[in-house]
Length: 244
Ligand SMILES: CC(C)=CCNc1ncnc2c1ncn2[C@@H]1O[C@H](COP(=O)(O)O)[C@@H](O)[C@H]1O
Image (cartoon, rainbow, N blue to C red; front, side, top):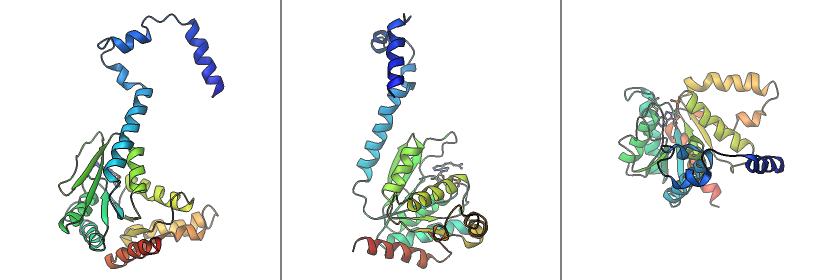
């Protein structure tokens, strides 16, 4: 840290810049807006995203994040499962948080919205922009993935994970790592779609835990079920236990 500071100061004293910092600051069209792409400025944008997110979600109340594929069609049985579990969660007093996009996100937002609940969509800027689905009634747009991921974790009391790809796996393992390391107080993680997740579950037992890379108790941080009632009850029980 100290070394980096010294080298910046040393560099500055010798430099004869073609364009001064003052010019860059004051000459608005000097570099055609390139200044906006510099990292120090990005820090302020990142900060602004945290401020916006915290402000929008501060009064959300108990909520569960539902993760799952962006590619699930509305006629897929997992879409129906996502919708049903979200309805159950709303009926149990939870808001539902998703990534706000299509597929399972839309299913969960639809279930929450139609049940009259708070249906949160934390959308993120992506090359294949899809925008918020039609069933979000509290939507926030993020530029930065990691800021958005903080919001899922900070404002959820539990996680329901339906079948999905890399995005879903990333969200699942982030939740598990935070629970495993005690960075969040015990938040239930429920995997729905037993047939889909069974292979991963077996591999975690038979390879990852057997090789000693995780404990068996780490595998047991997850509950595998297709039963909406069971999933909702796990979330409700955890919520009652935490408010004792
Ligand atoms: C059709 C398509 C690729 C749309 C992308 N639009 C998206 N909009 C919002 N969140 C997303 C999107 N894609 C991935 N995610 C995030 O990653 C997860 C799904 O990724 P995947 O499809 O399993 O890997 C979701 O829970 C969501 O939080």
